[in-house]
Length: 364
Image 1 (cartoon, rainbow, N blue to C red):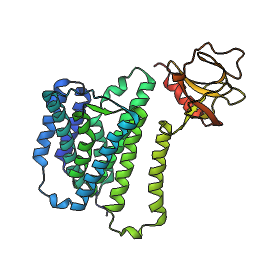
Image 2: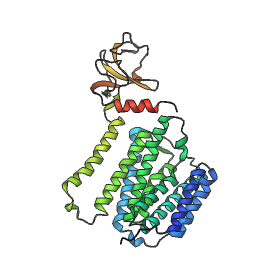
Image 3: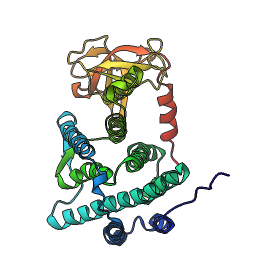
Image 4: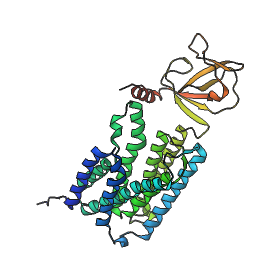
C-alpha cells in the first residue's frame, strides 16, 4: 500500500491562498500597496523567521553575493551602451522610504513563506508547483488584462509576466535546495537599485525580458553545477559542460544582435515594394554605415516605421524608390533618418515577425 501524500503546513497554505485571492481585488488600492501588503508580509516574516542559518553554507552565500553584484554591475554598465534616463521614482527621503518599505518587506515575507511551504512539502511536486503558482499570482499586477492594445499586452507579457514566472520557478528551486536568504539577496539586488538610483539604464520591453531570462538561466546553471551538485566538477559529462554555457552565450549574443548592439542588424520585410531584390517575409541584414551612395539600398525611419528602399539620387535630401514601384518616394529623408545599408537577405525567415505584427497591431 502506498501512503497518500497530503499537504503539510495547511494553515500557512490557507493564509497564502486567502491573501492571493484578496490581492486580485486590491492590487490597485494605494493603501493596500503601501501599508496593508508590506505589513501583512512583515507579520509572516516575524512569525516564520528561522535561526537555522547553519543550513546556509558559506559557499552558497559567497556565490549568491558574487552573482548579484556582477549582474548589478552589468545592469549599470548597460547604461553606457544604451544610454540612461531619469528614474520614475521620487527620490525624496519620504518617498524613497515608502518605496523601499513596499518592496523589501514583501520580498522577505514571500521568500520566507515560500521556504516554509516548500520545506514542509518537499516530497510532493504537485503541491510545490501550486505554491509557486499562488506566489506568482500574489505578485502579479492584473492590469495586463485591461490593456487596450494587443501589442501593449504582448510587450507587458514578455517584459514582466514571462520573467516573473521564470524567476519564481528559480526561487522555488533555490528554496528547495537551500535557504530563503538566497532568493531574498538575489531579489533585493535586482529591485532596490531601481528605487535608489536617480538615473537608470535605458531598457525596452525586449531588452528587459531577455536580460531577466538570461539571468535566470545563468543563476540556475551556476547553482546546479557548482553549488548544489555533490559530484566533483570533473565528473560532469563533456556534453553537459559544453551545452549550458554554449546555450547561454548564444542566447546572449542573439539578444544583443536583435538589439542592434553590433554593426549588423536584422529587419523583417513587410511589403513587396523591393521585389524582385527581396520580398515580403524575407529578413534583411543591414549595416550601420556613414557613407551612402546612389544605388545603395538603405534602411530609414519614417515616423514610427522602418522602410527599406533604394537610393536613386542625393541632393539636399536622399531620394528613394522601391524597385517594384513606378515612382520615387515622396518622403524627404535626412541623413539622421538613415539606420544602415542593406548587406544581404534571408528568405522567408521574417514571416513569424509579420504574423505577430499583424496580430498585435490590431485593435481589440
